[in-house]
Length: 413
Image 1 (tube, one colour):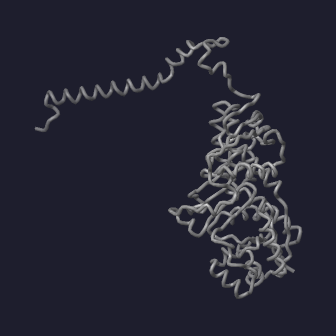
Image 2: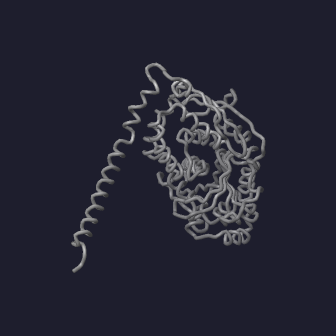
Image 3: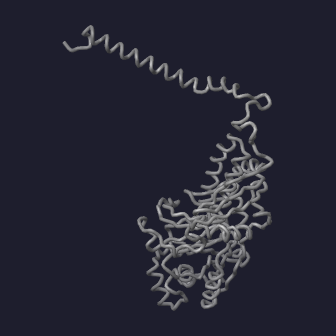
């Protein structure tokens, strides 16, 4: 008997994949796998009810802790892509690994997803699965299916689906972010209504301050209360969301070259990223901060691609880990007007001296204001020399042109 494991959500795409894997690909049995990375409970209810209606063997894997840890790893790398935190992108490798484990435990010879051929997720799933000996199958992509065809097929087969996406918008939710796309949102000139948002409220004039504690770059406590990664993220989503924190309306460049419009909510992610960057600003040297921006950018790109297990990422994380040894301390964040703004920070590793930086002190140790005179004389010295040389040569050329014009040698006979 041949078996195939299917990434299963209970939505239209994955539901139609069940009979198609049997009819078009010849598998004797399909098992569905749903992976919990922080979705709403209603999504699991839908998946279980649909699986039962299909008489589908169904597995639910809890991967929230693994996903939360990866999200906090991304904080240490200040990971964003084109201005927004990586939610869906980071979740896909975690989901793919969990599905692969179930597939191997159940002696499957194939593994499948319901992604289209236009998105990023097909690449993120398959980057994990193609390390195995299993046949990788993408029915929606390989058969060129449209949602209209899928709905007609579902009606014909009397499959347990209700109009596809279950609403006007296509929504993907996990601990770290909530993405909303589709329908009128595909028009860049369309102004999204408030109804698309669930985690955040429109900003008001109210504000609140919280204190976040970090240890070696990892957030560990809020207002003195220690949290495990999953509960910390959930707590900050609840605290920051009412202040409108973490909304992004993005024209995103996908890996296949398509440009798409995406709307995101990510209150906890925005809060933690802003706080972490503020603490790094206090403890890291100028050189470390400048170079780490390059490291962070590379980490973010690999994270977006779903390649967090790449050798390059391991090398990048070695640098990140070294810098994070001193990123320990507290940051006070103020929620106000849709922002999570750092308004105070403190650390025993601060590369900062108020006494030296103050305008009210003349001499500190062996350093005086007068000592800066020599630095000021040398600052820009090569620029001055270069500009003087340019100006002198330009003057010589002008003199030659005047001389030629005066003696007549520059005119035609």
